[in-house]
Image (cartoon, rainbow, N blue to C red; front, top):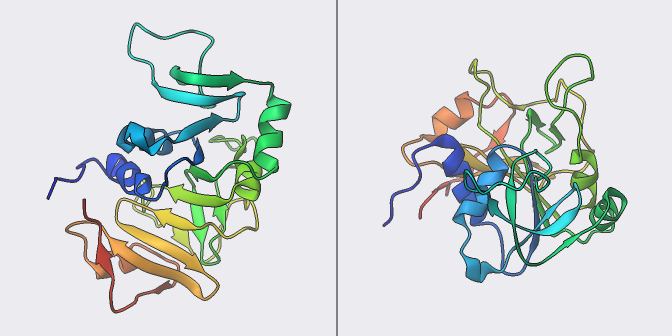
Length: 222
């Protein structure tokens, strides 16, 4: 059995990559989600869409090979794959709002018991802005949240009710953290997997929202 990534963010990205399917069109959000591309084999034929105006995004550019005008929505220098296409922002969001993106992977500041996420702060308070998150959550077929389980101060990010503005009323499809895989359902948040070396009790203790814990909680395995 191969060793899993030891870095929390890399572990999250590796586990999210296992949720993607052959031929899908995928949007990767800023931060941890961008690492997902590192764990996808070329034969998966995944096409990446960037909301700032192109489809067919490749890996991050290597140092010294950056093209100043070629960046993803987070301002990172990227590469292109054969067949890549550029378009304006209006077309980009038409693609998103029209339901043509299969999966979006984005970070979150909070997720609540109803599976709703908050990924931006009120203007003037600092922190991330809304960006394309609202359109992506509403328009994409599947939404996966990729985030660390707690804040830097140890406070839970999975909460009974979000204290920050809700990005959308839609329930996300999956939450992947460095501690667990949780699936929102109409009945509540179901704990599906724990990370290697992590006990179910630890996940419950670091989650302020109510968790449904089945008898058969699995473990993330390669």
